[in-house]
Each structure stands twice: as structure tokens, then as C-alpha cells.
Image (cartoon, rainbow, N blue to C red; front, side, top):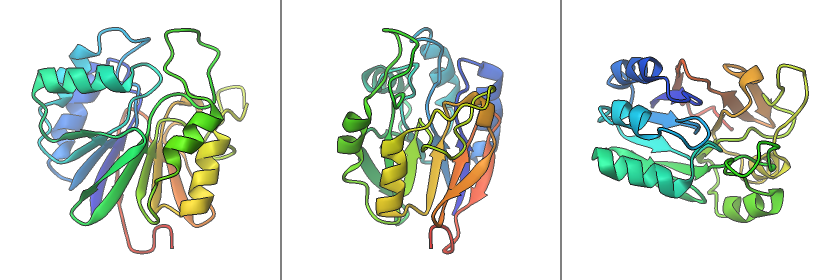
Length: 207
């Protein structure tokens, strides 16, 4: 199964259009949050991305809430998109599970859609073994370093990876680690970024 992974387009319609142009070449598109900037103008990037008719899995970032993302997808008539936040879906026999929001709570103030580590633990508890985990926030100490080298990832996300051994974890949020890949145990963890990466999901992933 070929996946197109991306995150953090932050309203860039040109970046969104490039993803649309590549989506027909893959089996599933995975968007790991932050489609807009600070809860503003979510409509524009979702309108562009809604041209994708490949099955698509999305989680909200900290720049938009789950409800805001659902509402814009409905308004755009984007039937191929599935929003996951504490839940999952199965596409062609492969389970996907998602968690949105900034974890741990960010310093950005009231506009940021954030979760505590305990809230994240609760939402991640139903992640099935061997799923593709899509989390806006990276796990602690894996693809989570900002431009100053600080580790800003989530302990709860890391614990979930260690407990449930996803085949792949896709994240974003920390721009300083965009396009980097690490491992938590056998699970590859990819901080996608806005340019998009095609990832072939093999039986070896997470094994």
C-alpha cells in the first residue's frame, strides 16, 4: 500500500495543489494536521484538498479543532476524507487510528487546540495493534526537535507506540524536524511536513 504523507500546510494553497496532483498515484493520503494558521481561513486549504478522491485520513492539528475540520470538509463535499481523533477507520484491510491537537499543551495561548498528556492517553487507548497511527504531535525524543534542538514531543504518543506497535506513525507539528524519520522500537515515525512523501507500507513496518 502506497501512502502520501503530509502535515502543516498552514493555508498554502500551492502546497495543497501539489498534494492533489500526486494523490492519484497512491492508495491512501494521510494528513497529520495544521491545515490553517491559528484557527483562521481553514476553508481555503480544505477547498483545494477536497479535489482528492483517493481515500484520505486526516487529524486536526493545533491550528484547527476536530469540529472545525469536520465542518469544512462537509462544506467542501469532500467525501473521500475521514477525520480521526481518538478513533479509527480501516481502508483496504489496513487500520488507521488518529489523534489530533498539540500534545503536551503548547505555549501559544487560547487559539491553540491542545491536549494534556493524560487527555491524549485516554484518546489513544483504543489504538489497535499494528495500525497506522496518525498523530499531529510527534512522540517524545523522536522527530520532535525544534530549530533550537529542544525535544517537544509527547510522552503519551510515545507510550502508545511502545504499547501498540503501529506499523507506521505519521506526525507533524514540530517544523524543525520536518521530513525526518526515526524509530520507536520497530515502528518507523515520520514527521511529514508540507511537501509530501510517498511511503510504501510493507509487511516489515512495525514488525
